[in-house]
Image 1 (spheres, rainbow, N blue to C red):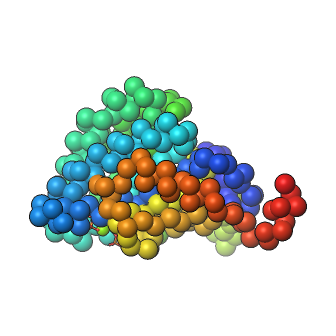
Image 2 (cartoon, rainbow, N blue to C red; image 1 turned 135 degrees about the vertical axis):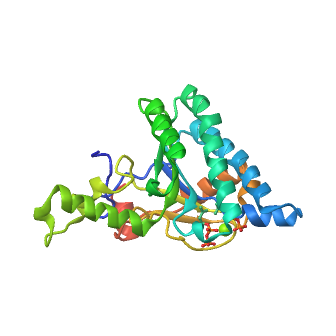
Length: 251
Ligand code: IPE
Ligand code: IPE
Ligand code: MG
């Protein structure tokens, strides 16, 4: 639980390889539309990119990869697309978990799972249990996730566990109750598909994350595109509130 390191309380060590990459996988629908295919064909192809990113992150030595698969606002989409996405998620869990386990990947699902059907919730629990002891890459899938929901559920849990914190709320007490309490904050955020917004992803955890936006659509994003994003990250000066001079003096 204590793994969450707050960038606003302690300055994290900046490593050349980002320890944690968080991605908004956007642009599946447009990718399909460009090819005169139905939107769901884009989601299907997007799964290939997920596989490629998991492999690449293991090779590069990234410790945590977090992927936004379905937002708390994506229920607003047409019912048939929502149902396709749910089925795709279930199929992915069925098909891929054994392989992830063989590759020492620990799988985590974050989000408000209460809205999912019983079968899907069962698979999620089993997949997490099966891979829980793995110490290679930690792959987190954010499903029915919303950054605001995350903060609210953390406050509720904290107040239940420690009623004395009501009227005395502080971030250190809250952080163990956030969904990603097992991971350091993301070093690098990537959004594909051209939009420059957070869309209610990890609001709390992105406080000091380096943001990277690319026009490349998710199904077309590949290992070399990831390398470009990491190179961009490596050129950034992460100051965490300090001056540039302070950073060079400390070297
Ligand atoms: C991202 O691609 C996948 C999900 C949100 C599930 P989109 O489906 O948002 O693709 P665009 O943005 O319409 O191209
Ligand atoms: C964000 O993409 C959510 C996921 C990738 C799961 P959206 O396509 O839903 O975001 P908006 O609606 O363009 O902000
Ligand atoms: Mg989109």
